Length: 266
Image 1 (cartoon, rainbow, N blue to C red):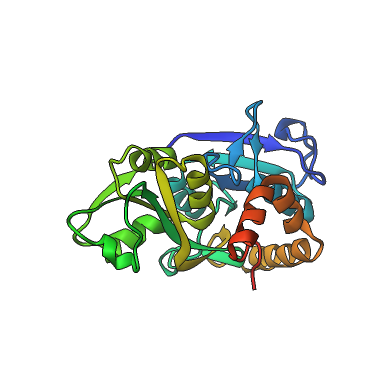
Image 2 (tube, one colour):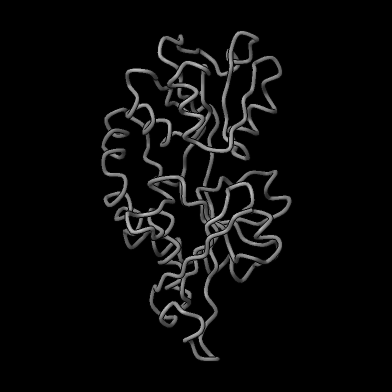
């Protein structure tokens, strides 16, 4: 599992270089994420971590009085890295599921979204997701995602193609090699918006989901601190600022389409 470590100074914790911090300096908050999911987790033009999750992690670290250490790794390795103590938490568009709760704990949710479909152009609209479970259809999913889990648990007849990268899944659909890609609502919108000539989207979620911060089992003190931060961050307009910075076009589009926006968490 390839891991890239990046230090980001976020206030309250030294200059970002552990070698230059005093013995009493607070330990960095090691946040795991896969920097391959723009605009939530990505690299900027200079190769530095950027995006919604990076800004959220920096604000969290600042609230805890610790410098931020971003650990960039493959999405499928995040939970094991958390369980083995290599990272302190996961902020990587991670859905809180019952299956994952067996091995890790979660904060309160900060994003409300759901699974929906990016369909190949010319594919008929579906009245129900179960229509995809047919020998005549090929469905592509990203490995380790809730879309992957959904397809494994619900599709026994469709051809299921499991790929490691999101872009590869989208390419299968745009080239007509797959009928559908199961992914989250915001990403499906963005991919459809870029490939309107070769795809169309069914944006109404067929499975509701909540993203939350992943933490080690039994980390009650950390969980309470994160929940307190998320509440204050929301009340102070932090999520509205993230939306304006990274998701202004999407927020306007969702309002136009009549869908709640992802940060509208009840």
